[in-house]
Length: 118
Image (tube, rainbow, N blue to C red; front, side):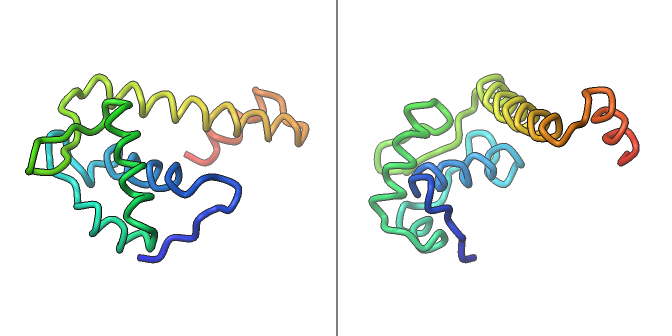
């Protein structure tokens, strides 16, 4: 799959975001091995060094961990992963609400629109 990266954001951050999506949506299960740097670089169409930087940052955040000579694995800390997921959701909702308010909608109108979609 070819990814269309945003020029306004470093590619390694966008790669991190894509890997986070796979963790959060269950494509990468807790404790499972993720694809190799080389495979991810091919998948995303980026330099392996870019993937390496993204994976290192995800390790630093605690979402991944390394096993010597075995590769990288998704954290088994479900609470940590759920907290990261919630932070992302809250941020996206704040952006959505702000944009809707800029269009002139009140919070009540936004809630009504969302309820109508369900």
